[in-house]
Length: 409
Image 1 (spheres, rainbow, N blue to C red):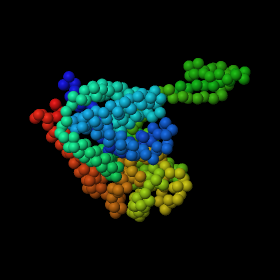
Image 2 (image 1 turned 135 degrees about the vertical axis):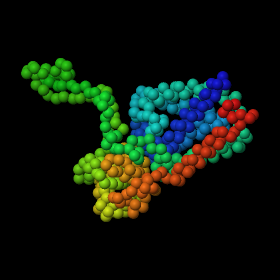
Image 3 (image 1 turned 90 degrees about the horizontal axis):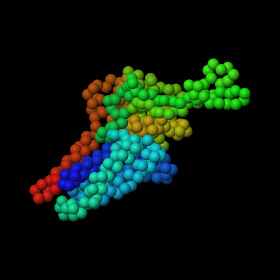
Image 4 (image 1 turned 180 degrees about the vertical axis):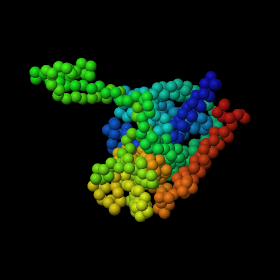
């Protein structure tokens, strides 16, 4: 019984903390996933609250897991775990049956699961969760209720701030295919041996005024009495999808410049704004200044957006505006506006509106040392993350009960 109790706490604690953490490093990703669900279930009126709801959910997951693992307010933490499981287990069954969104997003972009895999995972986690819930009254307090609540409140505040810093400075850990160091053309390649899409092709022929459908196996290839009318293909099995499969940039005149950008031996800076009218004007102006500087220095600079043509025209300022798929742009960089520096298809660096280096640093002859200084992670975010990790470890290790770690009690 003691072993199963310990194993249950470790499993529940780590799974919930991991789930909360990987979503906290990408709060906009959580907001986009909420948005997908709202759209699928015709709840568009909730779209403005997607970000705040995402933060509430992954914070609740992390704190519930921390509570169960550390012992601080463990009974409350177990209640939190059960409430989340009671809500999301039947919900994931509905998602598995209807498949309105292909990836549930329960582990952010760190681990992709199908809806059926997610439902199965929830059924497995229910076992230790129910066990802990049944035995919740057998757990004793770590310390006084006030001290326990102070610990929970402190970690909650620190964790929320951590997610907001990831929102401002870009992800501490980038699980997306467009992370710095990746090569975009390589990400588009389908490896040899991977399955291709499978289609069912139907041919429609006419004879004596009557139309009939045939397959590839039985269509009347040698019977001249039949007249071909039409054919249709239906996808029956999805093949391998490369990590990058929808990266395409087109000028406002309809010219596809994707290949040129990805093969350019020089540096190309993309200013990415999924929606120009939803970005802060001051942040856009800062980007436009950098764009004018790049133009003066002969360095490639493009403003890439999914905004409507009339919106783009209202921002025309001599820079080259291009269009791309909105979902792709939101995947490339979690900031509006955000920036991606390319060279021969390699992602050299990425920045949010708040971390964009001074315009003077963008030149065609940037040294490796300059690039390293420009593209390194924000010291504020890194330092804060280490502080948060230290606080969590301190509260996990320090509490002891009768001379032993509370986790082993």
